[in-house]
Length: 223
Image (cartoon, rainbow, N blue to C red; front, side, top):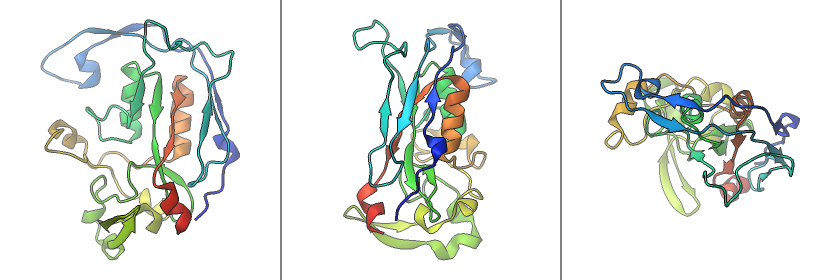
């Protein structure tokens, strides 16, 4: 399987972010019983270029131009990269999770990427989506359940490469580990699976970088 790179994926992110401010617990969980105030430092000016062919089986090159004003490795403030977004507060790899991470002060968001049957990159940590979406409760897709060997592991479930983007968009995200993050279950069924382009658009709107990672590229290259 080969994913055709899109010209829209070659995007330069640059812009002046909001001034530093205060976030409260209520900003993160509206109606929360307690308010914890803490200081967050928004990125000053973050610029990133997504280059190269966005194909499963190839490495996505992410570079920062020399003119970009980003924290240096020796700066007092660390560069914060939100892997899966704010997954402690919203179901992971949703636009809501990424946006909340940005509002909490992340300098970059990191989407994990897998492919659909029609070659569109979407944000999921694994191509097996039985535990991160409500697909198991959808009778229309019951016959898509199957067993595959992915990078040496035998897995049974539903796989993104067996769904078109239009079909995946009918599903909704659910909390992957409800025993550990029970509060996230109140958001089950609310958020769709985002495409890479939607993640790019979100990052561009807030002026932050993205740090994408393709998952199981060898497997996808073999099918």
